[in-house]
Amino acid sequence: MEEKMYRRENRILFSLITTVIILGIYALYIYNNYIDSNPEILNDLKFWGKTFIILVPIMIVAQIILHIIFAIINKIITNEDMPTSEDEMDKLIELKSLRISRWVQSLIFFLAMGAITIGMHIWVMFVLLISSCFISSIVESIAQIYFYKRGIKHG
Image 1 (cartoon, rainbow, N blue to C red):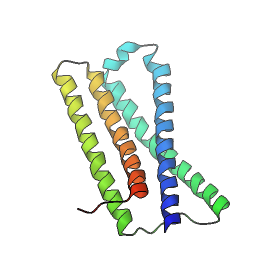
Image 2: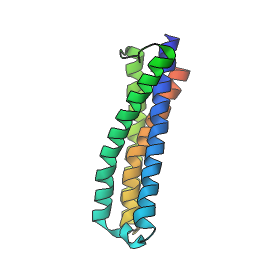
Image 3: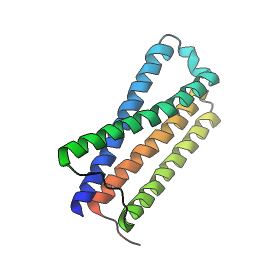
Image 4: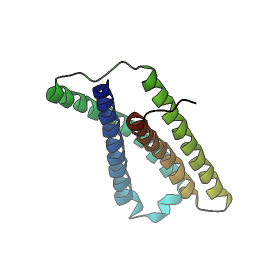
């Protein structure tokens, strides 16, 4: 049982690290190729739409490929498959961490709307909205790791 949790924690940690790395590389690419040479593009709604629409499939494809590689390497090293079944604790951890994640995403969404309300540039809202998706995903992963390490109190 403890070994199953350890493998789940490794998978979650791997996902967390790859999400941060992929997002960081994409942000640097966008900054270096578009924003650095033309800061006015930050106010272009079409730019933000395209940036986000392109980011989503890049993240999905990269995560799928990296998780396949992780599973293969894990199989070679441990000679065991990744756990596929979930018990009640796994589901409870997933639900609790998802709830925390949604609260974080909602808070950042309201911050984005507040930024527009107080007259900040439109790009501030878009950066907050895009960030809310990834920050909430990161918070969810951290919460899952925390709950696997510390356990869940019922109540």
